Every structure is written in structure tokens, then in C-alpha cells.
Length: 273
Length: 332
Image 1 (cartoon, helix red, strand yellow):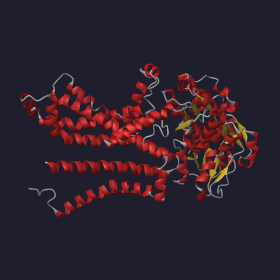
Image 2 (cartoon, rainbow over the protein chains, first blue to last red):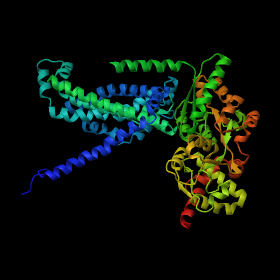
Image 3 (tube, helix red, strand yellow):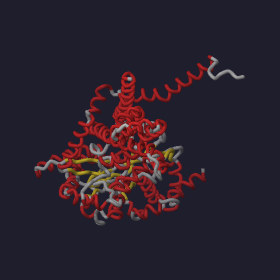
Image 4 (cartoon, each protein chain N blue to C red):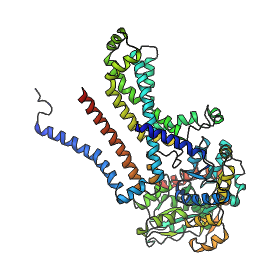
């Protein structure tokens, strides 16, 4: 009765053309512009901006926050996913819904929540004060809110997969006398590693780029609690547009590097099998 | 693995930094360049005097936001703000310093001050010389929103105070309606207003602190922008204080006090004058007389009462500012 969609060569060309055109316009052009603006003051400008102590610290701090957030959320996310897909217990659905909270609330709200809880007016203030522990307006606070806003990624990747995989293989392994760790390492892990890897990559991307939550608990102390996204805003306000674009280009490079790492890992793992 | 080593290194370095003596100066948005020059001077001065090596860290933001962060636990040793009400908040809400903080340092604890100035385009085509010229012909204005910006609150109060002196209370009110109606865009902060005026080419006149006007002129030499300082003007103080509770906890009371007192020395005052802030030191004033036109300055307190009253009378919801804006819209 009707011809299949895409059977007409003209329609196909129009659709493909629109898709490619939009990608170039919306994705590629802004990315290119960042790099063009970053190099607008020449290579010397790039080098002098990159050697600035505050910039170096912002880069280091961003890597530190991501470097701590990713392993924490990797372990936490795997445990939660294991819990909700391998056991049935009352409140299981509730737990699955709770996991979505960091995505549902605005990052600014997340930052404020942590500030209320661990700041000077929070319930732990007296105790933290006595122990002379500074969580908010210091790097631990940055890690805490970043862990919060990025924690659902790994869980969200694992839960659907682990539900479909079912428990037969693992039950068989247990019957054959495998220990819990052996079951995880030899049966579960090989099945979920792709999803896990993807979760890690998304977590890392979010941890590196997080602005809202971090901006609330940072206190923006230059050379101490300034991550790269915050540093971009500061440079912009200092009339240093070139510096801001260089920092932005760095963040973009980190994102591209993440994608490249993902592609390489995928290729190598596929080759192995 | 390499990432782990990096992390460990960073952790170690951040811990080792924490053991040296440090001061944290929490300041307003646009003072970064200023303190970037003052801090090394003080560090050298303190080293020569006591032999102790000091590190001074800076945090910059809107000063109300900075005060809020300190109340919530940011351990700033000293605050250098552009509005005294933001230091009062530290006493009222957190009891972090005593109510009489103004009396602990000279000149109301304000080592430097400024006033409002107009930035006009090349050649001053609309011939703007004083407040009254701003409502002539089709002159349009740019300054930030007085609701969100301390800078703009001073602009509003300066314009209103000058109009009251010139025209009397009733006529001043009508003049303010006209004045506010000519604002093409109310940005949230000073830097946003600068962008509107410079990059977007909006308005004939940008009104901001005299110091900032001079910095913008220096920043964009090609535009050949000009500065106009009106004859009757508001005194904008830049108050400083050490935060007692934080310096006690950090063991930096002595350093924090010395740092703020250093701002009153000839050396630091000259630096402040280089950034076009007006200062108190007689010799520095004499040496920089040509930089600062003579103006007749009134204080906010003299004309409008204390800041709390100013807020409820003028900037609260449905107070004078909102009424003036609404009347301006109706009469258009």
C-alpha cells in the first residue's frame, strides 16, 4: 500500500543531509569555534595562560575530583545494581527510584543540600568543628557533591543489562562451588564490562564538567578550590576571554580524550573475542 | 595507575600547603587585579618584619554571596568588600565578628573609597557633564540592576541624592522616573553591564564606580572612551575587617590585622591610587591630585539613613525603586 520510508532516494538524501547538517551546525561548529578563539592570541598566549599557576591548579584539581569520583561511583554503582537485580527485598523499587534523585534535582540544589548538611549551620557543624575537619569550601566537598550528581550513571547502565542477563549462569556457578568473588569475577563481570565501561565514561565526563553543584560548595578560592569549569567563569569575568576559551578548549579535549579511550577499549576488547 | 599517582601527589601537596601560614581574603568581584599586586607587597613586608613566609589566597564573587559563604563555613581570615552591610551580616547572622568592626581601623574601616562616574563614547557626542544632562534629549543609559548589584545601588543613590540637592525632594522623584526609564538594560552585575555597553554597543552612558570606569578605558584603548565625574556624588566606601572567629581558629589574628593595616600605608595607598581608587594618605593624595576631579561627596547615611532603612525604603519588593520603575512604564 505504502512504499517503505527511505525507499525514495530523494527523501533519503534530504533526511541524511538534514541529519549531517544539523550535527555540523549544532555540534561541530561550536567545538571548532572554541579552539579558534583559544588560539586567537597565538601560541604564545596559549602557553602563557597554560603556565599560569591558578590554571595548572584548576586542571590538577579537576583531575583529582574526577579521579576520586569515578572509582567511588564504580564500586557504589556496581554494588547497588547487584543488590537490586540479584535480590528481592522490600523497598527494592523505592531504592531504584531513590537512585534517580541526583538526576531529578538541579545540581545547584544538590550543592545547597550538602552545604546545609555539612556547612557551619548544619547538624554536624559542632562535631566537624571540634575535629577541625573542613568539608565544604575545600576539596573534600567538591568530591562529595560530584559523587552525588554523577552516581546514577553506572547504576543506570548496569540495572537493565543485569536484569535481562538473569541469574542462571551465576546460580550454576554457585552450585559448582564457586565463591561469591569467583562468581562476580568470572561470570558477572565479563557480561557487564561494556555497560560498566560506558557508565564509567559518562561518570568521568560529568565529574570533569560539573559546574552547578561544585560552584555552591567551592567558595572559589583561586589556587585551592577552583575546578576548571569554575575557572572558565572567573577568567571570563576578569576580561580574559582568551584564557577562558583556552580553559574551555582543555575541557573539550578531556571530553574528546574520554571518547577516544572508550573507542580504543571497545576495539581491543572486541578483537580479543 | 598514573592517575592514582597523580591523585596521591595532589593529596600530598594540598596537605603540605595546609601546614604553612596562610591568609584567605574574601573579596568582591572586580578586585582580583588589585589584590594580585597588593598581596606580594605585603608578603615581602611581613617577611622582612617577622621572617615568616605567608601565602595569601583570594576568593572573589558578589560580596553578598561571599558573606553568605563565610556564614556557611568558608574560613576567610579577612573580608575586603564593597558594601558595609555585607560585613554587618557576618555579625548579625553568624556572630563571626563584633558589631563595632568599623571602629577597629581608621576611616570607618575603609582604607579606600570611590564614587560614581560616567563612561561616555568617543568625543562625548551627547555632551554629558553632570547628572542633569542624563535626562536631556534621547540619552540612554546602562547600569546593572540595583536589586542584585551593590554597584547599581550606589548609582541609584548617587543619582537620587544629587537630584534632591539640585531640585528638592518632589521634583527629584519625577527626575528619577525619567532617569530610570532611560536604562536600556539592567544586567545583574557590573561586568555584565560593561559587556552590554562595550560589546553590544548599547546606551550612550555607562554608570559605574569611578575606579571601574578608568579600568574600562584602559582595557579598551581603541574605543577612546571618556570619563565624566559628576560634581555632586556619593561616597562609596570599601570596608575591610578580619573575621574574628576564623582568625582565632586558623591562628592568624596577628597576620590578618597586619594585612589590613598595611592597606593604609603609603606604599599600598599608592597602589590603590594606581587602580583609580581614592585614598586617605595625605602624601599619596597630593601625588595623585590630577587623577581625581574634585567632587562634593555625600554619604548614604546623610541623605537616606542607614543601609537597613535604605533597603526597606528603596530596594525591597514594591519599595521606591519598584514604584519609580512602574510609574515610568505607565507614563511611556
